[in-house]
Image 1: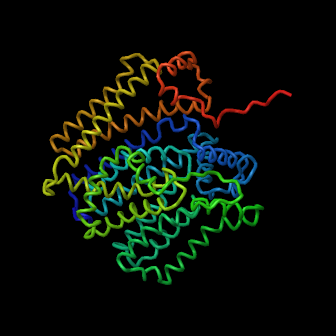
Image 2: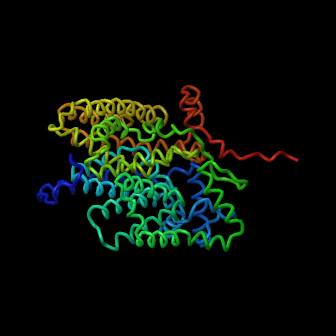
Image 3: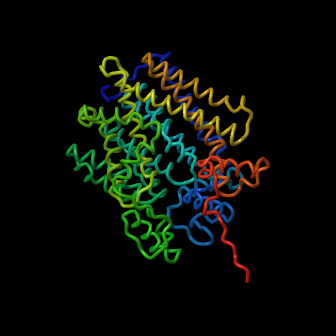
Length: 496
């Protein structure tokens, strides 16, 4: 692959095939993203806080200043709260599904954006492959179903970076892309504050700096746009500073916390880890899509960090630059690296398409070993689902085995196709198996697990306390997975 876009001319039958494949990708991804979206109660602290704020906005109509438990909730800007409140108003009531709907919609939009970006760089094959890599990523589905800020932030920041990429190479000299870029940056800031500017600025500065073009940032139009973006970004904060006593201390407390600076103000989160945290946990965070990480590293090494493919190099700066930047901050959480996943998907997709090309001279093992590993993982997932449905939920054996058998058939087909170097068909079979597993996991397993964590499981008519007690005594992992979380245990008031 050259890293540049292929010819714009595509035969009509190929265009129809590509459109069908993109539709298949979007619809297939939408199923595990949206299935039973509102069934599981919030158990993640950030989502629980967002839920309380959105419910308050919907019930009171107070949209300017977010409130939680009667106190101003100023740890994050309000854009995601507004999105959740708008979804609740459209549905007529606040529900878990309306809280998570903006994240699910942003996830699908991010998938479409990644496909469009990758296609503009490497053509239809790279575009579809990049969408597939995204659809294999655990963090993508996990955050896409989480009613919190992260997925909306990832969408807005990547849209701004994509627009910069297009402005630099193809749509130079036009005003509207520059205006839209700064509007996207301001919206990202109003989603999660200063990290938005960091996510957008670091790759751009690295890209221009290594090309010795930093003078571009000194243009008066850039200063004017940046000033307008900053004014729009800070407008809500200025209003809140005027209306809410103590807002300045709270804003500064939350802004300084990622750098490890704590004030006397109460914080919403402390998550400190050593600098190797993200590098070590990257395979765990990405899960299945991490199987292409060795190939991506090899591709980056042999091309000297995509030296002759500048648009891919920009994606490399996004992935590597943000990984290093977030590693240098004392506070770390897994979802911090979500904004770099689209760039990773584009780079991994280009590397996979290059390796699959017979002219590249790459050996079968570069894609064959990931296929074998994925087949083995699917075997474990099939056994896991069979145990869960038949032993824990006591579903009849024939019904409980239907899904595991489908997983085995799809993964077996994927491995068989990989052995014959039919890589697109092999990837499609494995992707179907992944969607099937994720759908079962999110539709049932996660719902039951969260209901146990919150105590809502006892309200279910099919809940058998004696059965689950026996299962917990017999299987240690059941006791660890399905238990009441300490944060939902109510303190008993001692008798007087």
